[in-house]
Length: 290
Image 1 (tube, rainbow, N blue to C red):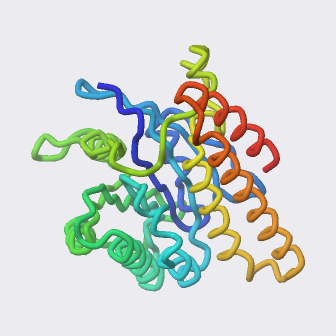
Image 2 (cartoon, rainbow, N blue to C red; image 1 turned 120 degrees about the vertical axis):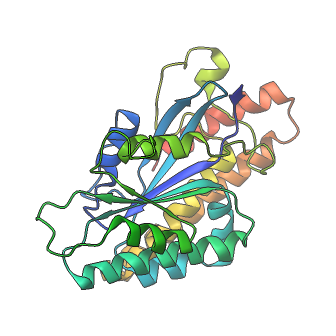
């Protein structure tokens, strides 16, 4: 079965948490950072099991200021972005102090709070807390059982990315366990109001092996990515200290959103095939200006 309207993955963590390293181990590749940050990057993973095939969109984010991040993601306008997710992957370096442990735990609590406020307690996705290797030999040790208990209470599964092979119960560990957990996730987003896939290459039958930044996204997908970009601008704006630049970014974001709405309005009365083709070209043109 082909899943054509899949839910998304949000992979995130503090700067240098190892998100891209995990994605490379998991998917075989990873996107290239822009301006020394991973926030806002997009990645695609073609996942195939004996039951289904899906092309999953992976959004990548950084948590620089936890309280600012939480404040943006619990806003009503962020609900659509959060609701579109089928999985959260929170990466963190194994702590070397009690203080670092506290930050990691508070980050997991914040993510759980964001999900609960956006989706209630009925959300059926996957939440993974992945411990990445620490460059410095950890001086602060926490047993796997303690990690597992803490994460389980918040709806997360703890995975130690440094382990390999199988555990005493014959279950995969490390990155293999991350993959297994994602393979058993419900990805079908057919009930969501995010529209059809609008890849022009797919419509022409020429894009089977292509991976572009925006080619596989619908108008609604593009709008959600723009919304996510706007949320990141709000989170990071206070660190820039240049109100004029921030105002220009907001103005540009609003202009892009207006163009996407115009595409939606213009194509709404077209026959389906023509609407898809028109929207694919129009969205691609809008995204080239980013």
